[in-house]
Length: 317
Image (cartoon, rainbow, N blue to C red):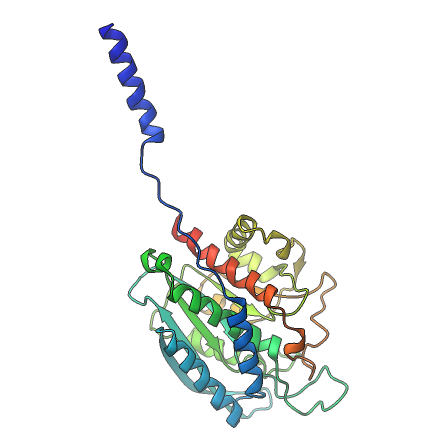
């Protein structure tokens, strides 16, 4: 009997080694508010074309800073000058906001906020600037929606990962024949990052992430340098039922803001951008039809909620 009791006790201890250890509690993901994001899209649109050096651009930059301040997120502005493909100087205003800046482990989320100064893909008014509500505005709205969700979340107050939001300027003043004439803001930041000596575990860049019917395939430069991040995104999307929005077909490589951040600072960064399997951007791209008429709350929610889940899953690894 004594031997039996000892054996049972030993077995119970062994079993406890596997089942009685406290497991890390999976934190509840805060909800991305699609109505809030759409409200920001409309405000962005109302400000007009945000071409560097114009009054509309100045007002939009002030608006972004004010929105971040209202969320209680620390923001820094990086102002500089760049030379566009015409050889002219243009002002650059990057806006970098940090949630829980005291944490060493960080993730970078980014999008450009400027607009193209001409409608080169349109059949009318080609010399006039565009509103860029999807190509510019959707990334801004998604960043703001994520910022709002995590800044009010108890879950994100207890994790060990901080989040930085980069609003890149002067992304869209480029010439297709010269790749490095685009993304002037992120190019400048990659050479002179703020904060100094900036490091992040990984990053996600959002470009044209709001159009009705959009999905987000695998961009080839992202796959080459940030394949593990793509895997994290896909796993998070599957967990919350959004896997169909992240198909396996490949596009690019695309020279976007993520390219210069990865090349300059070595941060593995994924570009979430809509493109068809045939390699086409939305029909409104670089035209005056890029307005809120074609923006989907549901698509922005997919992008924002998947990102939030990705960050929580990464922190729990």
